[in-house]
Image 1 (cartoon, one colour):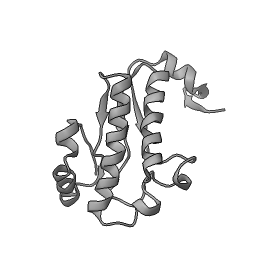
Image 2: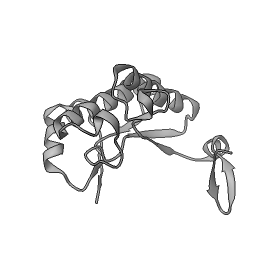
Image 3: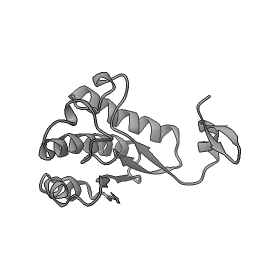
Image 4: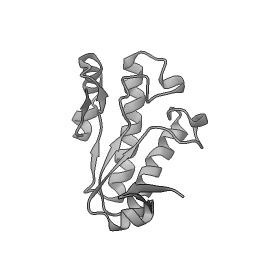
Amino acid sequence: MDGLIIAGGAVPIPGFCARALDMSLFINAYHPAYDGGETAHTDAAVAAFGRYAARTVAQYPNIRSVEVGNEFNGNDFVSGPVRTPHLGARAGYYLALLKSVYENVKAQNPDIRIVGGEVHSIPVGYLAIDLRQGRCGVHRCAGAAHI
């Protein structure tokens, strides 16, 4: 059973979501049906990732924010071709995912906050690349540093 362990018992995810108050959805950048389960990098996988986020938001209307990806500047949460390029190229992959989620989710519900830019430590060089590529300036996203 897909579920969460709450107060010693398993609660089915749909049941939990129906009872929860405001929620945040965290989605990582891969899906087993695209790009061999590696971090989404092809146009088809990136588009599907955005559609998946929008469908999830539609299914669970108490979602108020969507956090896209995790620590894209590190090697623990990326795989395949996305893991190997220099950080400038990796930032481009992330921007494509963030843009896809932003456009699809906002079309579903314009009031949902899109959170992007979750990074490992405080990587000034990587964040400078992201800012030059227009990520936060275009999407006015929030971000987080995991230290």
